[in-house]
Every structure is written in structure tokens, then in C-alpha cells.
Length: 292
Image (cartoon, rainbow, N blue to C red; front, side, top):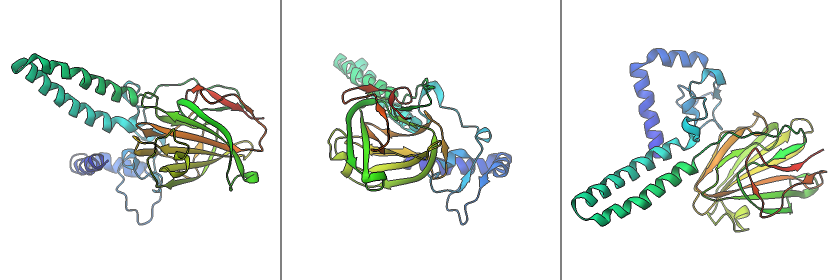
């Protein structure tokens, strides 16, 4: 993150020096208001780390960087991809030189380096998904394995209880999170915490996490998606903010390098649950339950 932020400062300086016309055009297209704004915003890229708390925004058609990312990769993971590729590329070159000039056994070290690079690329993939058109369907917010389908105490839900469906994401799963059902974001809350293994039941309470509270568009029914960190995952990404209108299957963020995603609904809501612990699910494609 420090590298990304340093590059962003450098990029803005270069744009002001060499492309003042572009800076003026983007200033005219910038929407919203941010009194006393501490954020330096030229274009939509500068909202990456502050969109949740900044009042400025751009229409989608006015952002030249609105695409999903090259080669089906998550745009919010491109910095990690570049940095890891550079580091592993240097290691591969050093091993190749050592193999050619010192001893053939150094070539064997290329195998784990290449495997590590392939896993990094595989981790940050962001595939397109076919979203079910069933109006009663609530889709999975994440790829992974269902670990819990249970009722839990949740004081701020109707009746003080919620149905919780927990999904564990391994390092081999897609880590882009999705909106389970169309609605409106009412709150986004961050909680610092520990980094227990995401399969540990205590992780739902003790780990660092971010809550996205929504209400359904048609019924006003509350719904909560929790992005929960894991033992390896140390970075939660969510670009939503209160007031956003969201559609089922839309991307909401990602959790980097192994984690857990929980979905909570009022326990007293009439629903048909279609998954059980042990089931494999795919974000935006697998129907977790049907609501009336």
C-alpha cells in the first residue's frame, strides 16, 4: 500500500506537469463535494483508498479506468501482481544465472518460483459470472466452501437473531466479493482485530472485519455482508459507501490471501435455504437461498 500511495503522489505530480489539459477536463467532470477535502483527487484512480470517506465521485462513463482489468484480473490486485512479478522475476533470473555459471542444481529452484508466481496470478483472477435471473434468488457473496448455516444472536436484527451463512475462502478461490441481492447500502463499518485462521469459529468475533449493511430494494429487509480477515489475509478492500444503490452480483470488494465471508439475514424471514456446510459455492452464480 505504501508503494501504491507513493506512486499515486508521483503520478499526480507528473499529470500536473505534463498533462494540465487532462487535469482541467477531469476537474470539470468531477462530481460531489468534499468541504476541506484532505484527499488529492484528479481522476477516479485517486479514489481507490478514500472513496468510502470522500465526497467526490465521477460518472462511470467519465472514468477512463472503469474496465474490469486486463486478462480477467482484479483491478484492485494489480499492484500486488506487479510487485510479486518483479520480485519473483529477479529471483528467477538469479537462479538461471547460477544454474548456467555455477551448478546445474540451481535450475531446480526455478520450479517453486514459477509455481509461486502462477498462484499469485491465479489468486487475483476476476472471472465473469452468469447471474441467476430468478427474482427470489439470493446469490453467494463469495467463492469458497460453506462452513456454517446457523442462527446466531444479532441484537440489531429483527427479533435479535439472524441466519448466518459462513463461507471460507482458501488461497485457491476467487477473492472478489459480490452483492447477494439488489438494494441500498446503509452503513459500512470497520472493526480492527486479530488474524486467526478463518476456519476458527472465533474468527467471526475476534478477527479484523468490515460490515456492509444493506436493505433490499423491494422489501426493505436488512441484510449484512461481513468481510473477515484470516491468518494470511491482512487486507480487506471495499469500495462501497452509505447511500450506494447496488445490484445483485455486482462486485463490492475483495479480501486478499485467504479469508471468510459471512452473510446475515433476519432469522424470522421466510426463506428456503439451498446450501449446507461442506457445499462449494461461486460468488454471484450459486443461489444460497430463495426469499418470497
